[in-house]
Structure formats: C-alpha cells, structure tokens
Length: 296
Image (cartoon, rainbow, N blue to C red; front, side, top):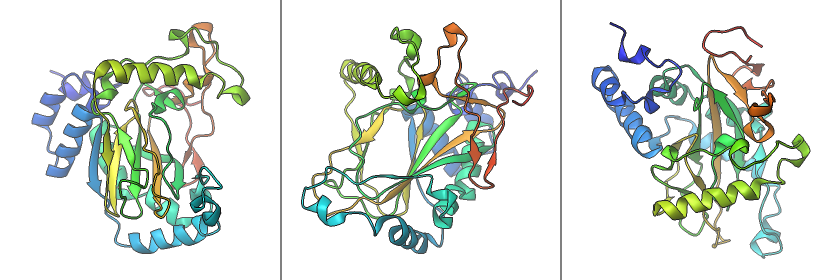
C-alpha cells in the first residue's frame, strides 16, 4: 500500500488532508513537528534563526543598505516612508547568507516535502505599512502552494515600529484570481491598475471571518515563516524614533512551474510563467518543471 505521503505528491505536506497521519508517522524532530503543525493550523510559524554571525551580518546590512537612506527627512515627517531594498542578495553577501541559511532551507524542505530554494530578498529599514495581502497573486507555483516567505528581525521590534501583522488561519480561505473577478490580465507595466480590486476582496474576507490580526513583536534573531496564502501586512509605523530593520526571503520548491497570476489568464490560454527564477545560493536560473515533466 502506498505511503500516505505518496498519495498527493503535488500537495505540500503541511496542506495535505492527511496531515495528522503524516505527522504521526514521520520521524521529524520536535522543532520540525512544531513548525509543520503551526503552518498547517495557523498558516505561520515562528523560529529562532540559527546563524552564529547574525550580529555581524545585521551590522553589515545596516551599513551598506540602510545608512545612506534619508533618515532625517523621514523622522521629520517630510517623507512618508523609506524605500525597501530589493534583491540585495545579488551584491551583498550578508543578505545572501541569511537567505541561504541551511537550517531554514532544510526545515522548509522537510515540512513541504520538496527541496526549497531562496529566490527573492527584500530588506526593510522601517515598517512596510503595507495593507494585508496575499502573496499568491504575485508569485505562485504549479502544483500550487509550493512557495513561502520567511521574515527575519534584524533588531528588536517594538509596537510603534510597524510590526508585521497576520491573520491566523487565513491561508485556508478561498483564493480569488483574475478569472474570479472578471479581470483580463494587463501588460506587466500596468500590474498595479487593478490591485485595488484584490485589496477590496481581501478586506471583505477578513471582515466576514471575524478573525483579529496578530502583531509580531520579535526580538532580534526571531523569524516568522508564512504560508503563501496567509493574509499579512505591516502595521502603521507610528514611532519615527524607531527603525524596523528586517529581511524577507521568499522561497520556491523544486519540480514546479513558477508563474505570476496577476499577469495570467489561464481561461484564455495565457499563463505568465516566471522564466528568470534564480536560486539565490548559486545565482543559477531554475527551470520550470512540474511533477517530473520536461524542463522549460
């Protein structure tokens, strides 16, 4: 008889309808069992980031990415925010080392059931203040849900510093894409035109659920893993005497095709495959491939 793990190879282990049996029959250590259980139940899990040189890496990121930002203008209220720094892994080894952390990559591989790899980094000096949203409209996988994010605190985060917010259990809510809202995917340079439609849907889902948001107030070195379908965002950054230095790393998994739902119309035969998905550890492009099929 086939193992319960083998019945649905195209479903992450944490999303399996047979998760309880998978958990019972696995030889996972205590941390893996806890993380898997929390991701399955809540859509997020916390962990202590295992990196002995984290203080040095954080100091380097602070010096090379954040020190030149217009802090005085922001603190004086002359600026609404400070730009996040995208894809710094391509030139900053400290960012790359955090993204490539072997403990995180191995842990994700165990709880999802496929080898994980980091493909994108974002570094924040202050809170994003971004409205709660779902990552899956921007980057997704086939089979679905083989994507997740890891947010790492590079300093202690107080309440007024715009902490991360998330809605427990929201990864189980219905996901609506272009075909559900009567939208034909626009060219890439107009991707923001209809984001308001998704924002309105997500807000209505949260209102109807009655689920209260949770704020993450980590100490330096704590991380949060979130499911691709989790509603999450950033609380208002009300105390401008404080920063909120952090790194987000997004991960994909092997043997998948990677695509952008916002730019796709599958019902019309148009799928915007992501053909430049890098493995941050090697800088090599990972080819699209689903369930052992041909690479493209």
